[in-house]
Structures are given as C-alpha cells and as structure tokens.
Length: 541
Image (cartoon, rainbow, N blue to C red; front, side, top):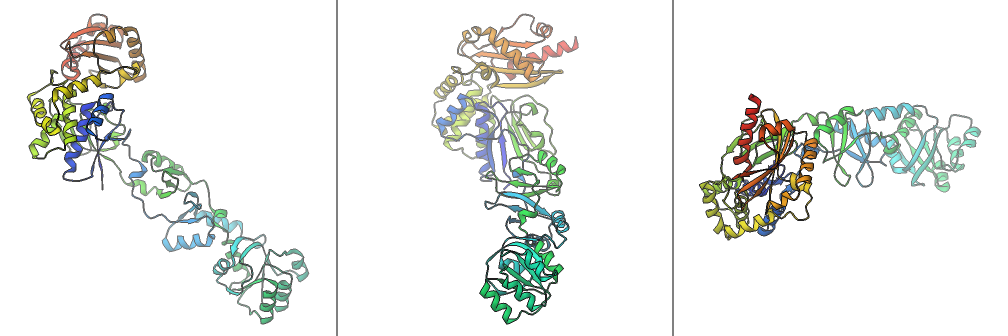
C-alpha cells in the first residue's frame, strides 16, 4: 500500500496536530490504513495534554520526507554463505543470469561480494597448478566439484596441499604429508605407493581404472579415493574453484541502511567499483542490492500538508515529495508541485474547523477522541473563540464537536490555555523557537515567534535576555529580522520584541522595542499584514 503522510508545519501547534489526526481519520474512512498522521517537530505541552486527555497516540515522528532506501521495492536477493565453494557462486550466476552474488556470514549479514571480476581474478592468480590448496572441504563436496565418483570415503573433511604425481616417485613421496591430496593417472604401482604413504586423498584423473588392490589398500590406510574424467589441468582448475567464497570475495562493497536517503545512495553507488551497494536492515541483515538501474525510478513519498502552505514551514525534503493536497487557513505561500493538486485555503480561525466542516458536509461522524482533538484545535487557535480570526464557521464547528466529544468548550479552552501558558522550567531558547513562522516579505527574510503569557510582567522581567536571544536567533537563521509577540489573552494585547538592523527597526516601528500593540492577538491576521505594509512602504521609499 502506498501510504500518504499528513504533516502540519515544522513547529507544530495544537491546531496543526489536531487537523492532521482529524483528516487522517476522515480519509481512512474510505481507504483504511492508507493515511498516516505525522509530525516533523516536537510537540508542545498543550498538544501533549490534548492527546493524553483524549487517549490518542502521538503522530508518527518523521523529521524528513526525503525518499529513503526503505521506499524502494527490491528484487529477490541472491546471496550465499561465506563457506560455500566458489564454484557454487559461479553456478548461481550462470543459472540466474546475474553478475554479482552477495556473500553473508552465519547471521545473514553481508561480508563481501563476488562478481565476474573477482572470479576471473581468482582464476588467473591460481592458474599454475603448483601451490594449490584445499581449504576444509567435505569429500562429497570435492567429488561434486570434480564430477567424480567416490571409490573410497575415508576422511570426511579434506584440508591440505594438492600435488600432481608427475615427478619421480621418490621426489613426490618426499614432499607429501598425511594431510595432502595427490592427483595421479593410470599407473597402479604409483597409486599403491601413494596410498601406502598415508595421504589424505588420492584423485585418479582422466577416468583411469581404479583396481581392487588400490581400493582395498586405501580403505585400510584411511585414504579417500576419487575417480574423475577430468585431466590433471581440469582437476587443478576445478580445485581452484573449490576455495570457499570468503577467500575469493571482495570486501570493499559499500553497505547502506534502509534509513539512508536515495540521494546519498546515488552518490555511493556511482563511486563504487561495483556500481552497486548492499542494503541492510536495522539488525544488519541483507535486505537487497542497490544498482544504478534500481535508482532510475523516481521514488517520492506522498504527503498532505495541513495548516501551512509555505516551503519554509514544511517538513524537510518536501521538495522531493509528492504533494497530493494542501489544506490551510493562512496567507498564500510559495510551494510548487509537479502536478495539479487539491488546494483548499479558507480564512477561518483554525484548520481544525475546515476538517470539521468536511465531516459535517459528508455526513460522516468523527469518533469521540477525534472530535475532542478537533475541538481542541479550534479552541487553541482562536483562544476559545476570542481571537479576531474567529468566524461564524468556527463557532458552528465548536457547537457540532462539543457534544460528540462530551466536552464543555469553556472548560476545555481554559484547560488548554493554562497548559499553553505554562512556561515554568522551559529554557528561553525553546520558548522563543517552538512557535515560529518564517516569511519572505518584500525581499526581507523575517522570522516571527509568538508566546502566550499569563502576564506582561513575565517578559518585561526578561527584557535583556530576550533581546540577546533574538539577536542569536537572527545570526543562526540568517534572517533579516527576528520578532516575537508576547500575547496576553486577558488584556487582548501583545508586546513586540525584535532584532534587526537598527535603521530598519526605526523605520518600521519608529521607537525602541519592546512596544505594546493593543488589540493584536493574531500573528497572521492582526500583525503580519501590518508588518507587510510597513515593509512595502520602506521598499518604496
């Protein structure tokens, strides 16, 4: 199933979280399980209280929607354990028409890769028949590799050097040890002499006959005997391919995790000698093979944006996502999409109101917990319907949701406001940054924060540290102007603090900050249009 992730803005407030949860339930009524509520920032105390009160889990935390390797569908992976003979790797490559085989350890974790290059390199390095060695290998496996018949099975595991009985007999006998393997031809006296010396295994090449005396002597001496139609050179070549995969594999293959971004994976694969990379799960086991062909597909995560429509406020990586819908109640921003989408922008008091209207218009009824969070979203964003942004539809939505949620809007609104203004124990840096919006206004990059305070004494007692923190935020964010509104619901006013070029501040405000704005409670409706007009006038002058 192609999941669709629903996101609010980067600094999620209660309305943002509520609308994401509410719209996910609405959409899942027709396509169960497809729509997933998500968030890309830390929840504030008010939002956490809302979720706890109505027993709803937090949205999935996703700091970025950049496509990751977990979004790719992988073809079946061909891998073999590191102890299998190299000939088995070659056989698998030929059978499946593949160029690379991943080699894994006993836990299924990739430790290397064998490709055509590695097999050819191994063959060339071992082309001489001198110096051949058999690693620990069951006699049955050696027989299979040589297409041989087991005449005598004495030693189950073979491990030793390989000799070809082409020198004088006394020379050969002077070299071999009880662990070694000797290849001989149609020479029964030589075969008997080799068996009598107590070697580990005798290989009779070119289909030469194995006499009864040789077989009997081998059984008595504990010598395994194999008969193959291969000549001496063919035996040497095939023994070379009996090496375990770990001796042939290349270990410099890049390894990526499912959490890695596709953009990073493209760079890794492009720089790899193999033009491929292993992809592993969180426990390190092999999940798939990534090739340049795999990366040709345009993989994008599908998202719905709620309570914002500006790229600066959206989840990281939104430019690489497939935006399928936007629902908002703010000013129009600058987000571009690859194709036409649904875009609903309605200047009501809260995005949760828009979602509630969708339930009402469709005849669907939200569950009690979702009715509760949508009600909380409206009450939070309109300050219990007291904000200047409140419309008759917000009031209508509250009347619709309250009985479904089993809540008194006045009491719920008071509880939410109390949590929202609880600033005790929170560092100033977090207080000023948790509800910020970034705007580009007439060529100026502006960041505006809003903080609800129980009394203006709270911020007035901290004038100096607030100015210092705003100056730091301006440097870190690269903004031309950083402003914060400390809003007092009881007095229906806001104190404005800011950091910018002194001449710009003087031109815009005409006095030193902080300054009291009577009747200003809404950032988007009361303050932002006023600021935009001042900046426009400053540009014209």
